[in-house]
Amino acid sequence: MTSRHKDGADYVLTAKGLTKVFGGIRAVDNVDLSVRRNTIHALIGPNGAGKTTCFNLLSKFLTPSSGTIKYEGQDVTALPPATIARQGMVRSFQISAVFASMSVLENVRLALQRRVHGPSFDFWRSVKCLHALEDEAVSLLEEVGLADFLHARAADLPYGRKRALEIATTLALDPQLLLLDEPLAGMGQEDIGRTSDLIKRVAQTRTVLMVEHNLSVVATLSDQITVLARGAVLAEGDYAAVSQNPAVVEAYIGEPHDTYD
Ligand SMILES: Nc1ncnc2c1ncn2[C@@H]1O[C@H](COP(=O)(O)OP(=O)(O)OP(=O)(O)O)[C@@H](O)[C@H]1O
Image 1 (cartoon, helix red, strand yellow):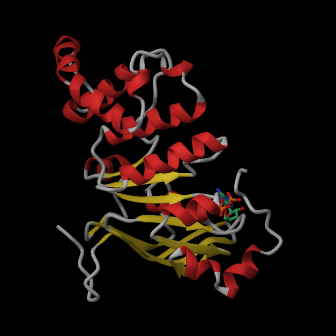
Image 2 (cartoon, protein in one colour):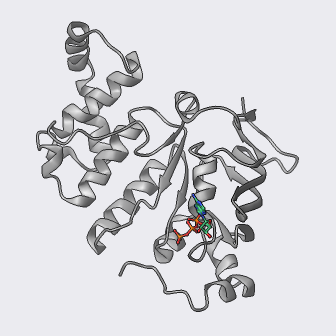
Image 3 (cartoon, rainbow, N blue to C red):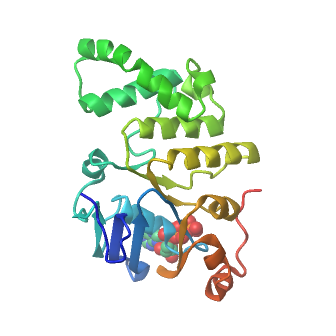
C-alpha cells in the first residue's frame, strides 16, 4: 500500500501533530513531517531542538503525548518497534546488535537468518541454513564495502567499518525505510566520506531518515531537510532553501558548527 497525497507525492512516513511532553517541557511540539519515498531526509536543528526526541518518537522508541504516525499509510502510533521493523521500517542498531567475537560474515549471516526464521531457531537446522545464506551475506557485505573484511572479527574492525557492519546487519532485515541516528558521529574524515557514500548507495533503492549534526554531509546527502528549533518545525526544504532561511540562520547563531572536522 502506498500513501499518495493530493500533490501526487508518495510518502513512506508521515507524522501529524507529534508532541512529547517531559514534565513541563514540550520537547517535541506539534510536529508535522512527511518523508517522501526513495529520498534521504535529514532532521537537523541546534542543540536541544528536539531532534533525538522526535527521532525516538518516529522510530517508536518513545510514545508520543499526542499526535499520529503513519507508515505506508497505516497508523502505527501504537505499534512497538519490532512489529514495524518486520514491516520494513528499521532503525539501525535496533535489532542488529553486532557480536564482537564473531566474524563480519558470521554477523551478517546470523542477521539474515533472523529475518528468515525469526529470533528463535532450532540449532541444527540453523547451521544448514547459515551456509545457504552465505552468498546473500557476501553480497550485502560487498554493498557496504566490507568485502575485504569477511573473516575479520567484528571487534577488530576500525570504528567506521564497524558502523558499516551495523548497517549491513540492518540491511539484512530488508528495510524499506532506514532510520539512522547520527550515522557519522565520532568518525574521522575518511570514514565520513566512506559512510556518506554508503548511505547514498543504500538510499538508491530505499528511503533514509536520519538525524545528523554534520551539516556539510547533510548538505551533500539530503534531498529534504526538516529544521527543528525548540521542539517545533522551523523550516523545511532542500539545503539551499533552509540554509538561507533567516529563521534558521538565527536559530544556529551562537551554535558551534558541528561538522566534526
Ligand atoms: N527524558 C527526558 N526527560 C526530560 N527532558 C528531556 C528528556 N529528553 C529530552 N528532554 C529535553 O527535551 C529537549 C529536547 O531534547 P533532545 O535531546 O530531543 O534535543 P536534540 O535536538 O536531540 O539535542 P542535541 O542536539 O543536544 O542532542 C531538551 O530540552 C531536553 O533537555
